[in-house]
Image (cartoon, rainbow, N blue to C red; front, side, top):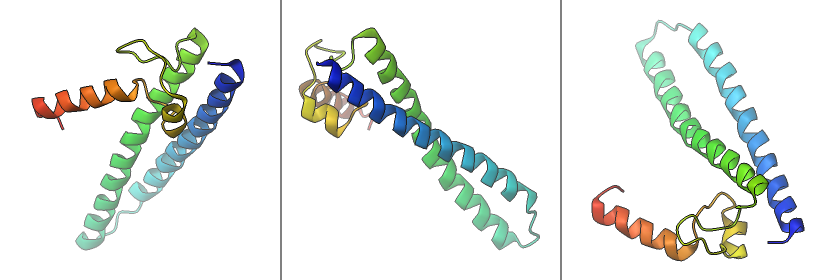
Length: 122
């Protein structure tokens, strides 16, 4: 992969990382404010808890994405970004553009998903 492509992916990943970290910080402040609101109405409390649970699920996914972005940024530094972790072949540029945090070429990803499905892990 050319250096200009690596630089473009680095910038893209860094921007996404900053956005995710900003969302995480907003969530903390939102939840701190919500915990201070001790509404006596049980329906209001239940609605608030449901909303917080949804926020936690979304942020949990984002937390995993933050970790993947960090791994990709490290792979760029190490010179291994864009190389499939299974077959060690280059990942197609189209795949990287569609999913910059991918660690597998499409063939290996399909094989992994089929294996997970067969094992009942999906």
